[in-house]
Image (cartoon, rainbow over the protein chains, first blue to last red):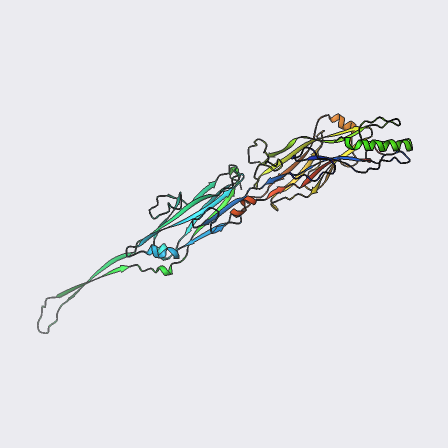
Length: 246
Length: 212
C-alpha cells in the first residue's frame, strides 16, 4: 500500500484506504451574525493494483532456458530456425552417405488463464537434405536428439493449458530433425547385337554373320555440400482462453 | 473520524466567539458544556468496513473464491490476461451526527491511475450508497460526488441507514485476444495495473438541500 501522507492523522495502515480528518476552514470566530465558518471533512485514501500476466515464446539451438537465439515479441508470431549448410557435409558422409540430428529448443511461458500451443512446419527442399529421408521428432531432452532417436513424431505441442498459473519458470521442449542420406547409385548394362549377311558377287546363299558386344556403367548422384541451401523449421504459436476462445 | 484532538482548541475558540457575539453555531465537534451559550455537538466520520475484496468476473471462468492479496495487502494475488475481468470493492460507513449537518461523499484521485498495459485494460467505478443508489460508472481517475446535484447526506438519512455501508466498486476489464509477450528477462518486471491514489472524502457542506 502506498497511502498518501495524511494531513492530520493516520489509522489502520496497510489497508486499501486509510483515514485522515481535515479541518478545511478554521474560521472559528463567530461573525456578527454568529455563524461558524469551520467545515470538516474526513477521508480514506489508498491504492491498489492488479499484476499482469505475460507470455514467452522462443526458439534456438539448445541452451540454458531464457537464453535462446530468438524470442517472440507479439502473440501469434512466427519464428524460423534455419539449418542446412552447417550440417551438409556430415549428412553427405562418405561413399555410403551419412546422417545428422539437428536439435531445436523451444522455451515458453503462459501466465494467468491463458494456454499456449504451437506448430512446427518443416521446409526442406533441394540439396543433400532434399535428397535425404528425414523425420521430425519431439524428444525429452537435447541429449536425446541423436540419429538413432526414437522420440515421438509430431508437429504440434501444447506446453501450457489454460489452467491458471502464476509461475515464472519457462518450460523448455526439444525437437529433433533426423536426416539420412544414401547416395543414389546404379549400374547400367547394354548389349548391342549386329547381324549382317555378306554379299559376295557370284556366290549366293551366304550365311548371315552376327556379332554382339556389351558395355556397362555405374551411375552415382553427385551433390556438393558446399552448395547446400538453407532449410527451415517454422514455429508458430498462439495463446488461448479457457474453452478455446482467444 | 471524531475530532477529539482539535476539540479543545475549537471549543475554546467558540467560547470566546460566543461570548463576544452572543451567538455561535457549531456544526461539528464533540459535546462540550460551557457557561453560555450551549454548543451542540457534531460528528463527521468515515469508517472502513472490512477489507478490499478482489473478485474475478471473467465470463469464461467458473466463479471461485475471492482473490487474495500479496503481502502488501493491496496488490491482487493474481495475474490478469486478456479476456479477464475483475472487481475491487471496498465498503465504508459514514457517520453524521449533529444538528444542521450535511455532507457529500467525493471519490477523487491524488495520484492518477496507471492503467498498464497501455490499451490493454479499462477501469471504471461506481459509488453505491447504503440505500442501493449507485452513481453512473465513471472512468477511474475521474472524480465523482455522491449524492449528485443539490442533494446532501443529512444526519437523519445517515441515521436511517443504520449500519448499511457505502461501497466503491472498481471494475477492471482486459479486452483483446493477444497475450502480452515479453522477453524472458522481462517476466519478473511485468506491468501492474495501478489504480493510483484514490481518496474517498466525506466533506461537510453548507449548500444544497436544506440550506437556503
